[in-house]
Image (tube, rainbow, N blue to C red; front, side, top):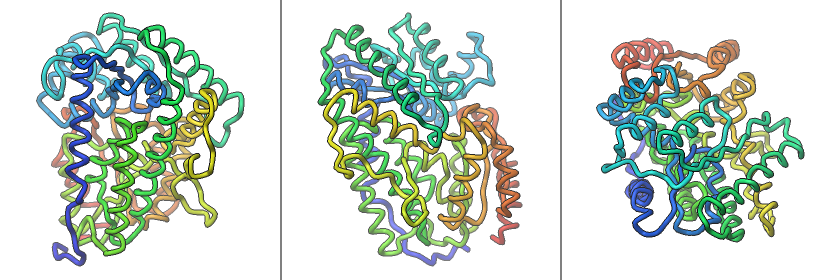
Amino acid sequence: MTENKYKTKPLDCWNEAKQLRKDYYDNFARAQEKGGIRWAGGAWSFSAVPAGLGDDVYSLTGEPYGATVAFNKEFAEKCHEAAEAKGYARDLCAYMRNYWGSIILNKYAWGGEWPKPDFLWTTHICCSHAKWYQVASELEGNIPYFCVDVSVGPYNERSERKLNYMVSQMMDGIEWMEKVTGRKYDDEKLIQAVYNECRTTSLWAEICTLNKTIPTPLDEKTMYSLYVLGTLMKHRKECADFYEKLRDEVKDRVANKIAAVGNEKFRVMTDTQPPWAFLELWRYLQNYGVVSIGSLYTFGLIGIFEVKEDGIWGPRTPPQEQGIEIESREQALKILAEWTLSRPEWQHFYSPELKSDMMKRIVKEWHVDGVMLHYNRGCEGLSMGIAENKLALKEAGIPIMHFEGNMGDEREFDLERTKVEIDAFLEILGAK
């Protein structure tokens, strides 16, 4: 199993991805030194909207920050203990507790004191989102806070009324931003940010579809370091440009049969966030000739897909490729709202059946041999309905296992026990 069947090589653009991520966190920390503005909110915030305030506006998205803290076990433990000492329950979102703990400790995961944002701008779909930043506002001295309610139902039940509800909130939010920052809003910058966001999210979906190839050009552990750029700055041109470069490189890997795992024999998919402090599990799979091709989480957290004419999943066509020219603020916001509502990872907040159907699609189209479900106690939103998903996959005859853990709190994960469970599962698949 350790003998390589395929060629492998590192990604040429890997260092560029690392630099983009580093610059993102550094720019946020230093924004005010340069007279810029910084805001914080969820990774699913309408990040294109604050872009209308200027080119020197920088953000900190909470979930990727929480994952960064989780990777640093010692700092994560201090953050959790600080949040718990303040009275916040241990069974709340682990990312949220990492974020609050950083504020309470006044420490930034990338060094120095906690960089206080000028305002908070987020969306609410997961049960924690609105309260996350309400509490953050209070901990930081009641800084201005605005939340857009996007919990209007799944994409297949969208309507003009629901879109207008979201657009009207964003319109109010723009007036609010002008008031709290004292800046004049630029609609042209908003329009360009919407174009960038649609391009970024479509390109990531296209990159994910290239993993349908055997051998798969990207393994999931590598993808974790790549999809995160879309969770940080999906509205920025440098993000869209990088994903275009990555797409072209992955296409080249497919054409030349360059594999992520040289001894690929079996393909699995995972689900929801991984335990960030224990990513070694994804390398452990390779001892068996097993590659994780991704997951609904890795694909659909940022990627925007559509069903193509041949009935399979592919990247959604961005408005600019459809010849749509955005000419006004309201049109830009409406396109952004409609585009975002089609996000795969938003659908299963309303029904586990919708998630099960998407997972079965991935199993079929990505040639998956088995599914590994993470019963993730750290995320109420993305773990909702996971037992129903397990039953649906089992009824479809798909080999499946589950393991228990927490994506952001290493105190709730047993590495050795999980390895034993993986050993048993892979033996069922026929891996040695």
